[in-house]
Image (cartoon, rainbow, N blue to C red; front, side, top):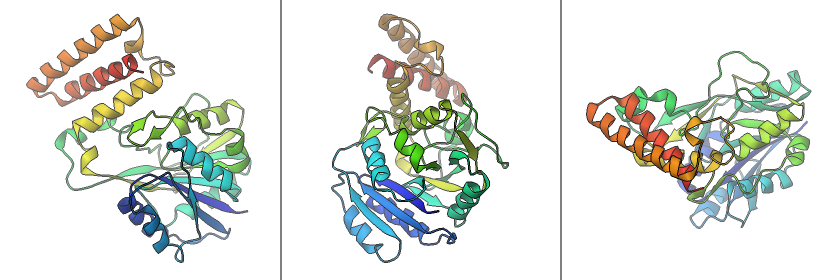
Length: 298
């Protein structure tokens, strides 16, 4: 068995360097492994960073000129030589036992097509008070995932792993490529490219398992600890899922004029709630207004 660790990066040379440094601290598995980093047409010092790690990690450098996370993920899959692709990000710190945990999971559940593990927060500085007051509503924007301390088998229609920490068997990954219409593209784009792949694998009848020991930390910089970022994320959410509505969001039902009215109502509720100081209420209204705005501008 061989494992491929894959990271896709775009103009994050500084955080990429920190993520790669953490990978040098991994406890080594019995299986051979490779690291593929896909430079998705960066114009910063990404290539210089990769050069500094060429003798410290089993690194293969891939350049993908087509901008978009799905294009970059598909490029990694095309070049992967491992039996499983272990996905993480350029702003993630993996636990030293991360690779070993996935190796044990693959050996234990040999019929499984995918796996996922915890994604925990690592805040830059002191996060604003409202972040912790409205914590449950910010798990999505911060890309966090913790489904408990015990392994379990994923079910079609249930909870699934998220993009900063999951693994897919290569033959299944090639059967279900990433949709270029989904995923971030530079500072724009949509969400959910990995969600669509995992849901397709489950719908095909294949199994997946939660691996609680395969943990990572997601670095959350100051510019993501803002209301502007929260609005941006949920606007993308509305643009992504408004036309599809897999979550049966009642706010997205109706014609554009009705969506506009609901959006304005949500914005008004947000302003009133901000004046009242009720954090849970104003965060809820801000999220609803942003989703509706995204659905209107899909």
